[in-house]
Length: 436
Image (cartoon, rainbow, N blue to C red; front, side, top):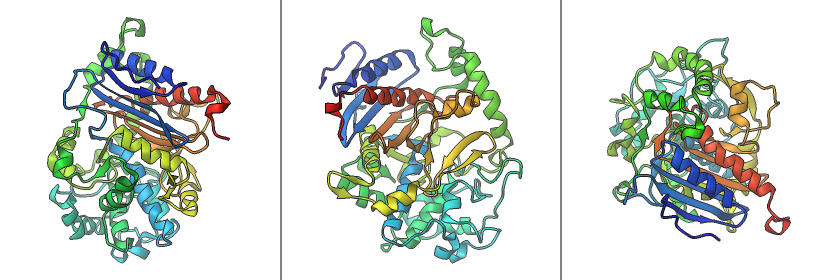
């Protein structure tokens, strides 16, 4: 194992034999991209093989155990939470939400199933009012402050041309939390379940709803400005371009995605959270203490990779079962192809995680950018960079957690570089290092 800290580039951590090229890539990326504080952790066959972190500005408060918001990578945690109810025989994906929550009825929502919600097809991508920060605290959730707002919503689909699948960027987690606490025998929120049944017993540093001691370990997220991103894209790679794509590559992606964002229902809806004007609100202590399961989980790459390792192994790790084989299979079943917002081709399972598959060479640009290099993985990714995914066939648990958000890297391709390299490394490992 390589445990040496490189003093010249401040790369810290370890890599197992056979994965040295991942550290080389990590070192290159920290030098060339507009990174700040970054963590990368990977498990293979239940063993941690990559554990790297770096702070470009040598932040003395940043280390491998710092907690960073991973935005929509959080969605896989709520998927695991609902699957735990399947394990107990308390929830079915084909059941209607109103079977568990009668007050959910009305506004065209009567026939929405759990699977519809988890596939982003509930017609509730946005609410007609903002949610107050205090209402997101566990006591506010238990008082049904968020639930009452959801009960009053009317189902809305963007247009017949784009289909039912529209990204429930924030709302999916709020709705899933209401279902979870109504079905869970202890009436817990998803954040409470995660801490008691997953994070603590698994020794995985991942939290939804931080307490005061955890707040002290957070690292703020920072947005790379659009202007700086675009200007940097004009520089050739050989001259040290600090973003992944050159201008032409970036423009091609923007031209395909931005019309969808501009015409989506979210463009006319109020901000999901009161006072939200930009992503900076996610550094607010009050928001960090609350539960927005789809967009506000905090953790380290070590913690997320450990949970991903458990998922890659079918819901078990170190001899402990976290999901039953039936629940794990059910969560990953019935991946249904559909374009998200009429643009990005996704394959969400009934349990709410996306399946990434090989694509044809002549596939559209976004289809290739979305899948190439992460074939075989399940899970999702977060705004601006984070990736929390698992690969059951290759038994990989993967987590990339940066604090610097590249909003124009729409498909998190900067983190995908590591996924592709990990897959290449595993493919070249001697048979003696691979379980049979």
